[in-house]
Image (cartoon, rainbow, N blue to C red; front, side, top):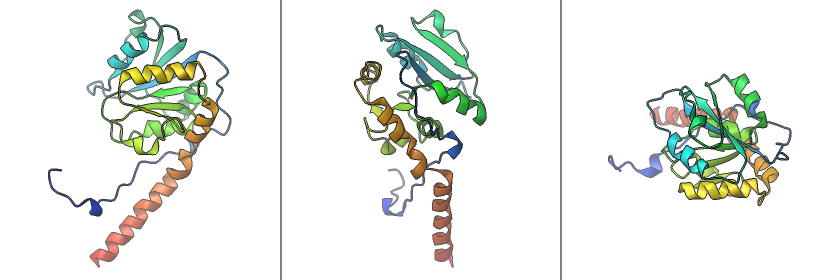
Length: 205
């Protein structure tokens, strides 16, 4: 936009996901109560839209769920909102993989995010991701097929209501989400970088 770069000269290489996050077993959706994950990050100075999400979820009065917030801000939000909130500090890969085993939904806020790796990790683990259309990974999300993309918080509430009422095939969406490992595993992404460097090297010579 500002530098008038020819789009034909741009090569986009996405982030990848570690295959260790891939969960071979089926995600268990038998329990009616939903476990929802929100990542609030390491840096509290970045606004990831948590307050908007908290308020939107507070309007889901007929749905049983627990919100799991991962981040350094460990405020006791449960004293303000009428649903259960549990806080966790950011964890290493092994602990995160175990943490995601019994979770159902990964919810991304309305704020802009370029290409969050945690969305890929949650998809590989079989979670149903609900992300804003301001998030760069949306091109890999087929709405209602391997996750959901929303444009406003009213849509978020409707999506969660449909999930809770089992109006959609959750197991199928979960299985489709896990297939992201095939397309965006680090071996494949690394090969794209290698091929690009080879092309640039030939041109420079």
